[in-house]
Each structure stands twice: as C-alpha cells, then as structure tokens.
Amino acid sequence: MGISSRSPFFDLLSSMSQGTKVSRVYFNGRSESVKSFVSFDETTNLVTFTKHDHSLLLIDIETIDALKLH
Image (tube, rainbow, N blue to C red; front, top):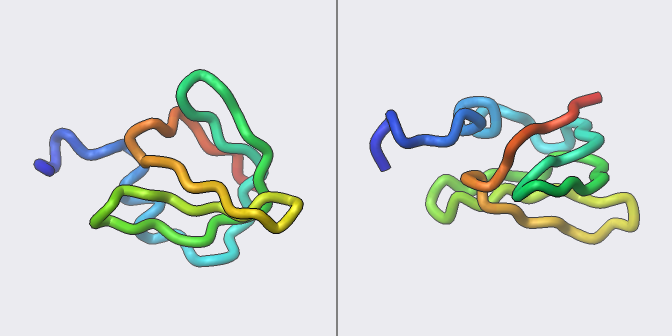
C-alpha cells in the first residue's frame, strides 16, 4: 500500500498503546461504543478494540471514519 493511499488513522493507530481509552468508533456510517484500543495489525489492516462486555470488535482500518478518545 502506497503512503498516499494509507488511512489517515494509520499513524495514530500504529503508535497507540494497548489499553488506550477509546469511547466510540465510527465506521461505515455507524458507530459502536468501545472501552479501549487493543491492537492494530499492519499486515491485515485490522484494528481491535475491547467492548464494555469484554468482547472484541475488529474493524478494517480503511472503514474507520472517526474515533472518540477519552
């Protein structure tokens, strides 16, 4: 993937620490309440968040529209 086609969230999520508080993720025209950031896999482009019920939410970085941080 060329640098010009990277998601605008690439640098932020690449440097974000596991456990960083994130309250909401906006993607594909909808939003999900989440608890924290878990990881970003640059190979698959998947971003993982924990939800309040301790389940995991995996989202393709290319679909993320916005993040609401604590």
